[in-house]
Image (cartoon, rainbow, N blue to C red; front, top):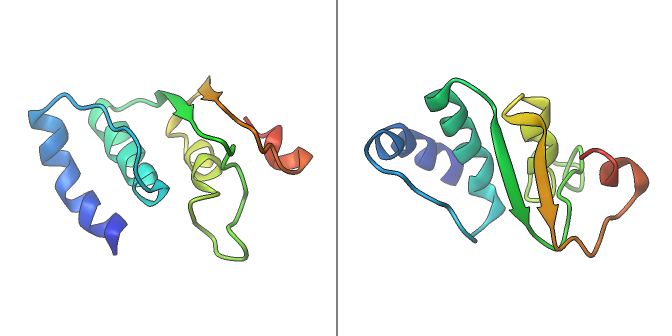
Amino acid sequence: RMRAALAEQLPALIARHHMAWLGGDHSITLSLLRAYRAHFRQPLAVLHFDAHCDTWPDHFGEPSGHGSWVFEAMQEGLVVNGGFVQFGIRSAAERGPREHV
């Protein structure tokens, strides 16, 4: 529900304001990237500060969650290929998700 509610508000916010989004729950990140991709009509570069890479193809059996948003963003073409930089990763997990970025 949060993603849908935010997605409705984003086009107007993005059209009126220049914003930087810092912190918060990863459940909104994918909605933000989708809206900015639509607004600018091109993929985005992303600086990701986190302890985890969030590149899992699913989240404990759920198709989407806070551990899968980077994987989803890349699959959807929301991010420039080679334009996703992560800082602070301390838990790279298994090899497959770790090497996805």
